[in-house]
Length: 293
Image (cartoon, rainbow, N blue to C red; front, side, top):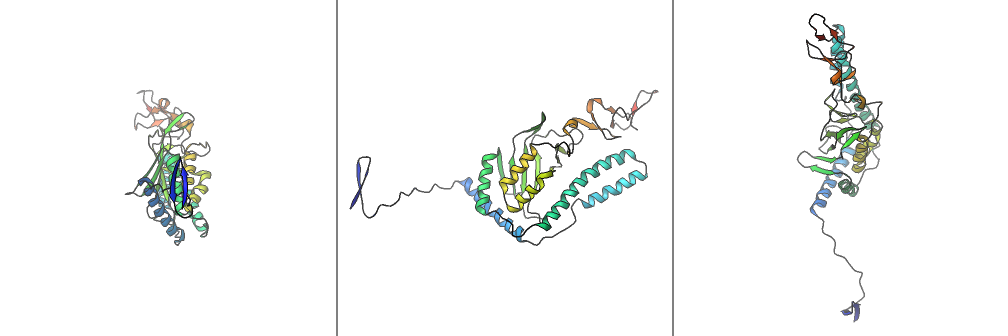
């Protein structure tokens, strides 16, 4: 018989002394939720990782062809205003087409033996996201995982918080995941309501130099890295490649030449009510009206 002395009390015990064993802390419900999600994401990643690589034409290709036909028609008929607008739309469409072609190239060059995050890694990432972002939300019905950033402000222009929404549903192609960036309190460019950030149009981010890190993080299941890279892109501004520059954020495109003019400095066509700059309008001395070219 041996005895242990604790705080002046003798406690009898038999046999060798055993290490102190602390009772495991029960897993709270939120931890269970993230663990179940981590297991599901890992299973999905494994299926996508080993699936045959199907290559199809980019989704924007038919839209690009339609715009090209419309531009040729406008040029041939002398519809100069329509042609200017179509050229702007075509430039934006080309950006999307280039991004989709790069995604196909990346898909074909992907190494099937590359690193893939474990379920434990993914679970740790989910818990880290819960600490690093204002809001982390999983929508079971839509199968989306979202984080919300702080309010973004670039060069004194308020753009508001953004939701980075990752689609976890079974893929329609060989891409691992698709995502959107949604303005929660939008302050869109005056010339284009679909531009909620200099590098976002129609909730699609122009990734620029961040494209490779984003694709790698998604393919490997490094969720925390993915969200951090996207959030950091939202906090930066590249003046060389915006959809709408910050200098023109509150300006409206001239319906004739396409340059940006402050809304209060533009002139409204008396006939079609289009806004034009002072270099493009034609004044009528008889009626005093202003007209576009």
